[in-house]
Image (cartoon, rainbow, N blue to C red; front, side, top):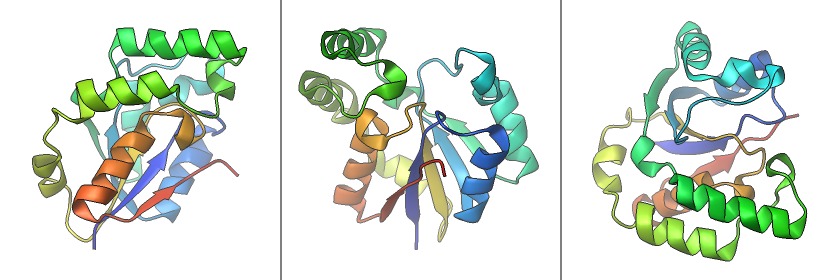
Length: 161
């Protein structure tokens, strides 16, 4: 049976990240980021080329699904809400309601998930990746919820620790 896990970058080291994925039996990772880089030396391992090398060494497939990434405009909408609430991106615990509604309407609704699911390796675990530590603070939770609702795929959220 296929299964989905979600994972963020924040809170992990490179080794702990790969260990968490392999411990869950992940065989493929879908990168849902628009820009596949993370600022700062603590997370340079998550920049696209380095991440892909680490995943390949662990025999985990990689695919960038830019069509499911939020637009720059949507990200800015979320940043404005973060500023209004006085929270930083790395400390966010929830998505702004307007962000969730617009992401769903503008990105998720038009995207055909059927072919994506059909292309996942059978009887395997696939990870949805973005940067936020907590899935509730990230669009990957919206994608995971849709995959569960439409395809009855079990979803597990992976966190550091």
